[in-house]
Length: 128
Image (cartoon, rainbow, N blue to C red; front, side, top):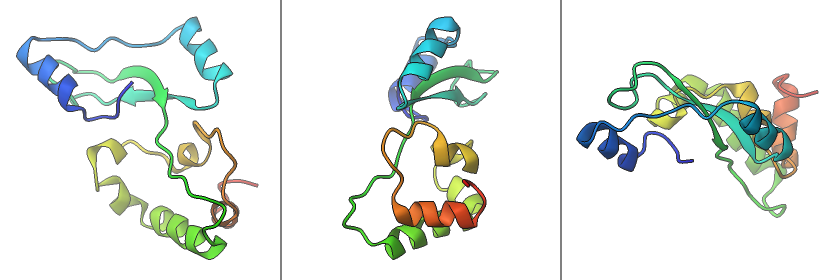
């Protein structure tokens, strides 16, 4: 489980023709269902040498965390800036290219959402 793109995987797939294999099936479904910090993921086609099709997997979703001490306004404005400039945000790094707003709100969350994030998500219709 690593973020993509990953230098070690790139090296392995280009220098010795290593292949990525999907991590799917009942065992993976059980792991993801029983552990809120895991989420399904996909390695996009073409990310690495020899990866002509997407590769289904799972991992720990990257999460932006803060403390309760950060004001609601600061977290609200940060969340709003990311989501209202989503096209720009997803071009900032290859790992962001396949992000979906809906998944960012719920996938892999194992801690409560900050009130500032909740406020924006409700305004945007991403949660009720």
